[in-house]
Image (cartoon, rainbow, N blue to C red; front, side):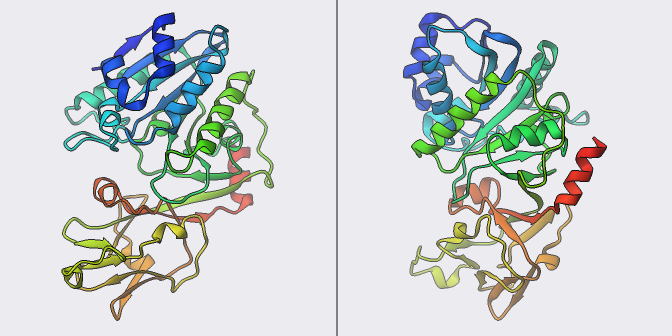
Length: 354
């Protein structure tokens, strides 16, 4: 399943510079590990297109390679080009496929799917070769600022994230993502760079990757408390399978029968701190509530949401993130996440203990 390009030929290099995401399935033949030599080693590891419709990472990488065409990169780079079959169709993942950012945790008690075996191959190969740092590039389907995500509160991780944005999110679930797996062996971040199709996102990611290639080492001293705003993802918000939902504005003759009606601009709430009592949705049946799952996998809906008089409101202050207006993503993954601000004293102490 995994295609390997140990040495990218001049011909393939030139074809990559012209390739759109939809072309990569035919050009590469499947999910691929590409290696480019550089002046320093070990290599920077970058993954793009784990979700086929999140193409900013590919365009940023393409722009970076074009900049260095005919010259040696400042540091070697290994690139995992993920779900090219979904990219060919312009979707997050194909029906029946596993999510390529949920395949990175090895389960010793279950037979692994081909995608999970592939992820372990990539991880093991990069661990054997050595890695400078790992960067997983993603887009959002809703309105969000550019931000970095870490799974470990250590200085190298936080410096790597802060180089991309002063807004940093710390999360522990889902624990099957790429950054979580790589964080066991190397400083790793996920960078979220807004919606696809925005030139600024491509430029920001390209410049960030270029800056990382020029680093001789990652700083080991603690990040200063005034350099980042850190938030902790405390829960995932889902729409239960049995609940029929729509976004207000998708009015149909049958809308009165819909269980759950979400605001048509729900993503406006992302990365804004809201007080208790904030309205999230209209619930038109007893089954029309959202479900909130905490980091331990526990249903904690009653701790965060209150349903009364057909209105669903928050019970405590929260900051939403990654709320999406894409119904397909809601069904395939989730509606979004809830975060809380982490006091600087907490993450400063964590850095000192690392």
